[in-house]
Each structure stands twice: as C-alpha cells, then as structure tokens.
Image (cartoon, rainbow, N blue to C red; front, side):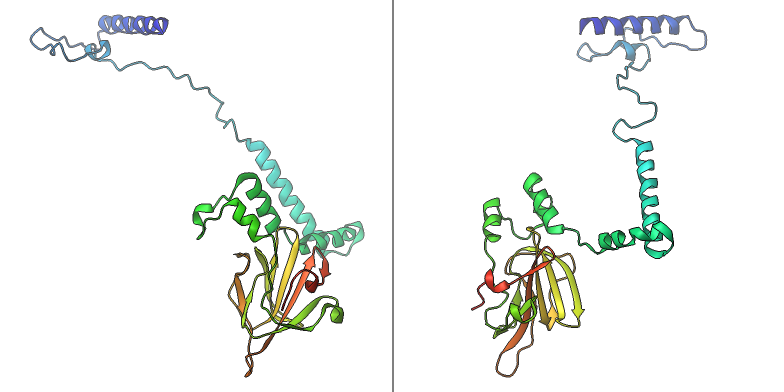
Length: 264
C-alpha cells in the first residue's frame, strides 16, 4: 500500500514540474490570507489545479465480451436456419433420397414437447422460478402430496367402459363441473369428431388425461392446472344428468382409467 502511495506521489511531483515549466499554462498561487482553514483538507491535486490520476486495472478484451462468443452464436444461428430449410424441403419434396427423411421430420413435428416433465425437472433442480407470481405458495411437501393420487373428473356411473373402444370411457354424472385428475399443462383444446369439445392435459410422469363431451372450457392452451382444477363443464338434462368422456394415456398407449381411478 505504501509503495502504491509513493508511486502516486512521484507521478504528481513530475506533473507539477511539467506544469511549472510550461509557458502555455499559468498557475494560480494561493496567498496566505486565502489559504483555507486548517480543518479543510486540501489535496496536492487541488492546490495545483490538476485532477487526480487513476489507473484502470480492468482487463481489456479487444472489444469482445469474455462470456459471449459472437462467432459461435452466428455459426449456431446459420446452422439452425439451414436445418429448418432442409427440414422444410424434405417435408415438401418427393424427389430422391431427400424424401426418405420425410417420415422422421413428420414424427418430430407431431411429437408433443414434454412441458410438464421439463417443468417438474427444472423445479426439482432449481425450484420454481416464478414462485412470486403464483396465487398460492406451496412448499415441496405439499406439492408431492398433491401429485400422489388421482381424483375422478366427476363422480358418477360408468356407462361405457374401456373394453368398448380400447381408448376411453363415458361416465354419467349429476355434476356439471369437470376437474383435472392431476396437476399438469393443457396441451390441447379442440373440437373432436368423436369426443366433441375436448381438453388434453399433460402430466409430469409422461401421462395424459383427456376430457371430452364438454359444453364449455375454462382453461386455455398451455395453462398450468392443479389437481382438482375445473377444466370445463358438461350439459345436464332435465333430470340433472350428464355424460362426459374420459381417457388416459401413458406415452402413446391408452390405459384403462377404471384401473387407476374410482369414479363412484
């Protein structure tokens, strides 16, 4: 520290000599009457009208950011653009070997991204990044408890079981409210020719729950829904009875909902 102070003093002394010997600059002397009181600290720089000298010890990077590699980013952008272009050509053309990768391209675009699985992994590793925006703050133990068991979308009597079509079931109920059996992300809201207005929810364990024959929907695409969250409603007849469609998939395979959920 003392060595640093000596070096600064030498530089200031050299600067004073240069200023005193130059004819282009005039220095102002302070008389004894104009001297400030003893309690005012005046530096050598202020006495001689010079600014303090600071050394910049920050490393230089020749105009390049140390954490950002511009060349690498540009190369990745070009490769991404080329990949998209090749995929589009392969999907549209029927010429030669290029058309052979068309099925792979189609399968890639038809495969649903695992929003729920990715979200579950991220929260497990790093916590909830938007916890301060959530309407309710749940601790980790509560979140595990929520996802432990499944609930019926609406209690009732099964009218059409899984063996009838190998995909889903139809349940007669007196409740017009259809709830999510488990927390997850809404990945599909559409009008289906077989199941009418349908909502599809993706869960963290790579399973899906599908709700059909709805009258209206209370959620939007990519909404996160908790277990027991209302997805929509069904139409009830004069006897306060209505029917909804329900199915579950494990990956691409349909499973019998009756084996995992009690509807009565």
